[in-house]
Length: 72
Image (cartoon, rainbow, N blue to C red):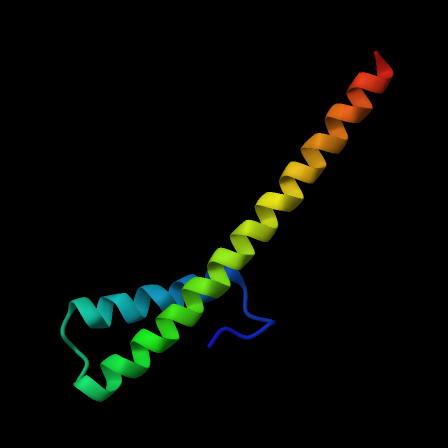
């Protein structure tokens, strides 16, 4: 599972490694289940990071627009 200190890039690399192992039929049935669970957690972690970054960017852009309008 992704830890709080893990970066988005690290989580994506782990997710890509899991996908490669699944696509390469490298996992037995027990490993497959565990890897799918981990992949789900990594996907949620990455999605949450992306949503948070998107919200922060929108907020900064909105604040920038307000500053520009007040200077007009």
